[in-house]
Length: 371
Ligand code: GLU
Image (cartoon, rainbow, N blue to C red; front, side, top):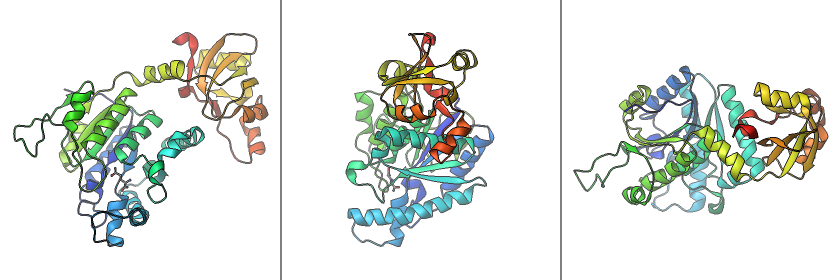
């Protein structure tokens, strides 16, 4: 069976691969992963890396004898380990790496969510490899996602990825516990995640990171429901990456539940409640309907309602009452009132920095007749 093709993926690398002996970062398993990332990029595929291991990497710098780490020690380890980990990743590539540290509270906050999304998209456009981790050094428990499997699924949704690879030290999901049952068989493809799949995941926990099989299945459920094919593969085996490059499925594939585009359109149309309206001129209407363009400030005539950055809005022609599109607005209604009708270059002066060109990016816009 061939793996589905993809254009943008999130690759999650677990602590057990970054610092397998808990004596700092090791190149042991990272080289084949780096080669894989390189090869994908050469093929024109985009990769976002979600890398765990800051705490595991930092352990050697802050010796602590007891297994259960106090929170402050853990934070200190992550701060020093994160730095070391980034240095390793940067060394493997001849293109730049960018570090993004975030927490659940950043992803929950609409304005910060949009800002992270824009930054990630700009980095990818400029061929930089984004390396994401949780901001462990600062985050309190209430602010955290807690494990990087779920974080990777959220990032995959955020960047509209079509594949998520969770690389760990396990071969995939088995129909029984392989440590106990010698007849346990790996499940190559999961079509639908339900309770029976969760019961197979059990409570297995990795010794080094915070995730186990359960968090991986949770991540797979999140991602597949957003139209993202999710793989659990063994990153300790070099041949895993060879197989992936050949289009094979070396671990377990959790199949996406729908097409990512139609899924997003469905979400935009049916789930997001429009908070206001953006009225546009004829030129902008033509650009949206006939040229598949994004909405720019120059075509905006008026703004109605009170909305924040990242809110959904309806777009309609100033001469008509029917909405023609719905999309996620990169500016608040207040900001739009100031910039409507202006060319992007002129807005820079008002804002004091170069603004986002698209008021509504094409990827975040759906034409209502289309649906
Ligand atoms: N963010 C944690 C770290 O860098 C890892 C969390 C996880 O293992 O899932 O150490």
